[in-house]
Image (cartoon, rainbow, N blue to C red):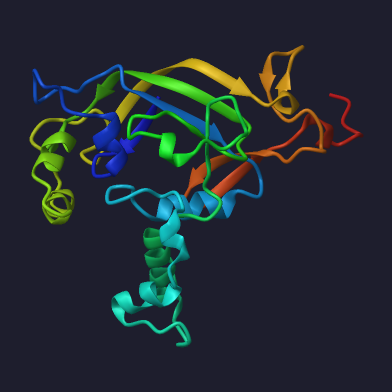
Amino acid sequence: VFSINKCRYSTLLLCQNSSDDENSFQTGIEFTLSVPVRGMENLILDVGSISGRFGSKFPSSAGDRENDATNEINGIAPTTNLSNRQRKKQKKQQLSLHGVTGLIPVPLGSSHPCPQSDMSPSSLFSIKGTVAHLKCRTYAVIGTPTVAETLTESKDRNNGGKAERETADSIECDDTIPPGIDHEHLLVMAEVIDAYVHPSYWDVNKLLFRPLSTDVPPYLTFFGSQTFGYVMSGSNENPGNNN
């Protein structure tokens, strides 16, 4: 069970309005979750800082272009002394243009990259470097649908990306019906239908997902506001603690 902001691009993919009833959602939509480890924090933040609405987040040949092209978008020269705000804006522009370095798709249960040429918009994949892959399927969505065109309608109206961008930027949320959580979020319920875990993170005796030793990095949890938690091996417990 998780909440998701109505105005995120992910919501258009996971919580599509039902074709039979505009006030309900389609269910049975499949998606994947990948569990990252310590050392992947910056990758996660970079992925979350840009939207997949207008293009892939994966690095491509576009990453071979000179960085000056990105900097010229808003007249920011690479050699200029930038404020923190300008630096963040410049980095976001670079990520949007070139993709996120180190973001590599892999098949579920594998650590070997899959060619992006073999991937379609409906392909399910996980991320290289993560230690657990979960295939999930939605079975309920609680909340008020967004007042906007569906993803399919938006694409049908797309004219060089301009029309789709205008639609995406004008999404509004219906606040005339009491929401399940609040007016900005939906509550999504899903079940795990397939799962894979690296052997170093699966306790066979206790059937627990956890690092088995200090030789492997702890896996991450996310508290929000760019703050991470770390799930450590039980070997890190205080040796003097006999409880």
